[in-house]
Amino acid sequence: MALFLAETTGISVLFALPRFREGEFGGKITVNASDFPKVNDPPVANNQGKFWMVTTDKGVLALYKVCTHLGCIYAWDNLADRFACPCHGSQFQEDGAYIAGPAPRSLDKFAQEAYNQAGKLVANSDDGSPMPLPSDAVIVKVNTGKKILGKSHF
Ligand code: FES
Image 1 (tube, rainbow, N blue to C red):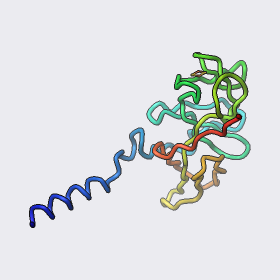
Image 2 (image 1 turned 90 degrees about the horizontal axis):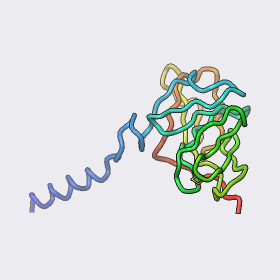
Image 3 (image 1 turned 90 degrees about the vertical axis):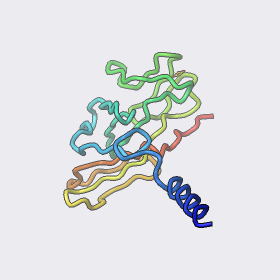
C-alpha cells in the first residue's frame, strides 16, 4: 500500500511540474526591456523564443514567428513596412494585424510581464495586447507557453 501511495504521489507531482523550464521555448523567455525597438523602428527577432519584439505607440508586443496560414516562418519586410510570409503571400501590420493573403487571422501573440530592478511586477499583458512599458521596467518575461490567437477576419 505504501509503495502504491508513493508511486501515485510521485506521478502526481511529476504532472504538476511545469513541462517547460524558464528560458526555453514553451516557458518564459526573459529579455531586457531595452532590447525592444523604439517606436517606428523595425521589429527585433528573438530566435530563442520564436517571437518578434515589436514596439507600437500603445506598448510592446511579442508576436509568434509562425504564420497563421499554414505555419511558415514569416519575416519583416523593411521596404514594405510590414510582415510578409514567403509561402503564400500573407501580410501583416507591425502589430500583427492581418492585411492580405490567405491567412485566416492576425498573428498570434504571447503574454508578457515586465519587472523592475527590484523584481517587482510593474506591467503585464495576459491577453497579448500591447503592454505599455513603465520607465522603471528592466526585464520583460515573454510567456511562450501562453499563446493568444490572432483575431479572425472572417
Ligand atoms: Fe504564410 Fe501560407 S503559410 S501565407
